[in-house]
Image (cartoon, helix red, strand yellow):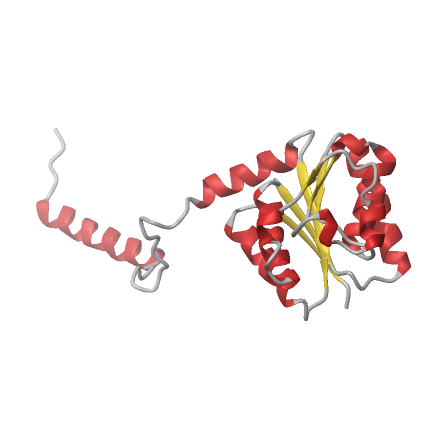
Length: 200
């Protein structure tokens, strides 16, 4: 039979406690961020974005500046053609020049049925060169209810409608493009997958 002195046990346990305290790290919880019950679940958001990226065919909105050099327009046109050939649907708005026009040209080359153009107002309110560009586009959404709005206000509403209809947003803008920055922020709030190209 082995006898153990209780004083030795107490001494050993106190030494072990001291060693554990030396090896342990105390983390204060007061400074840590707290997650409120109404904040979105980050894990679910990331899973949703990953699922969107992995989809074989997506609804991709392409919007951006009207003031683009021809080289940038050609790049957007080529990108849009490639996206449509992969089976994606392109959603954009009307435009005689710049991002939207290049997206329309690119989609029309690949497959007109994969293009959706949402206008801020009506075709009749568009300049003649925009009307000419929309000839042959099978899927055009007009908004006569916005006929009395200024073009700037109607365009802001139109951008939101385009973003609501997509899984992913591709935006070409400069750092001073307030309307487009607002559109990107709206897409972030809607947890869309976003790709932004700055032109300056």
